[in-house]
Amino acid sequence: MSLTAPLKVAVTGAAGQIGYSLLFRLASGALAADRQIQLQLLEIEPALKTLEGVVMELDDCAFPNLAGIEIGSDPEKIFDGVNLALLVGARPRGPGMERGDLLSANGAIFTAQGKALNKVAADDVRIGVTGNPANTNALIAMTNAPDIPDERFSALTRLDHNRAISQLAAKTGAAVTDITNMTIWGNHSATQYPDLFNAKVKGQNAAELVNDQEWLESTFIPTVAKRGAAIIEARGSSSAASAASATIDAARDWLFGTPEGDWVSMAVKSSGEYGVAEGLISSFPVTTSGGAWTIVEGLEISDFSRAKIDASVAELEDERKAVTELGLI
Ligand SMILES: NC(=O)C1=CN([C@@H]2O[C@H](COP(=O)(O)OP(=O)(O)OC[C@H]3O[C@@H](n4cnc5c(N)ncnc54)[C@H](O)[C@@H]3O)[C@@H](O)[C@H]2O)C=CC1
Ligand SMILES: O=C([O-])CC(=O)C(=O)O
Image (cartoon, rainbow, N blue to C red; front, side, top):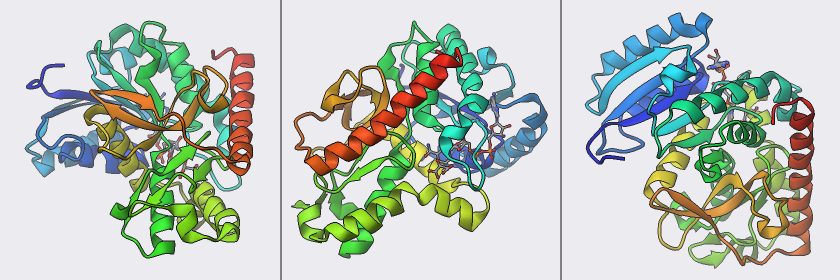
């Protein structure tokens, strides 16, 4: 991609809750402070009027970084030439639902969008899936875009990663910036495994520093894994500003690299690393450089961690089976 041309960024579900935070952060330079951004916004027809209102507000911000905005309901028009596609648009879950309950409702969206991206996106496109169930939606989009390299697809577990950092910072009294090497393994769901055994606080092993297996098992893991539900319970609707923030963190690090010595969590296609079934989109510790990710290999996995990772991967396998049966992949 040219260094001077605006970065063409597609956002789907742009008139939704996450969109209302995400678009303004993208336009204000949170993704790339020194790069112009062209926003390509996709919505379903009935939501286009609302989206027009959001565009009026974006105009009214007079953001110096915003090169232009195009909106529409045809994915082949909106994805034309995009360098980054943030697939947010999908129905969110309500109280009492699990993310897996959204499989059939949202799966169809990602077949159509995968096909459209395959036809018209830029050669260097990167595709981040936020819409739930994110891992399996990314698998659906990837499978429906055979000409785009599989490693250009990723699902969002960065919100879980950030939640885990925040919980660990609160427990240890450290600053969030003191915490490195956090990992979320598996699915973006209640089975996800936030791993303290490989995380560090000021360079010290986090699990050893905390030294409290009861807290780790009964408080830390469930608080992180069920945070989405806790927010739905408290707010009456699902996380939006934090999801937008994580969507930007993930895209920024993917495009521009992770800091030396640290890694981030991204759900990417498994080639069998850490025993995760090949082809699943599962969360791993990754480093990124030059717009490409690499799974960090060789981390020690205890029996406790193994069982947690296996449980989440088993859920991903079930989801893959379900969408195969639905004919989506
Ligand atoms: N991976 C993660 O960490 C998180 C994921 N999410 C998920 O993100 C998704 C969006 O959440 P919200 O913005 O709160 O939902 P929302 O309901 O406020 O907005 C979704 C938008 O998507 C649009 N949409 C539906 N079908 C579409 C299609 N085919 N093409 C383009 N747009 C379409 C809707 O018209 C709506 O405006 C949900 O699936 C939610 O569960 C939410 C929080 C965190
Ligand atoms: O929980 C939900 O449905 C929304 C979401 O993915 C999250 O907040 O992590």
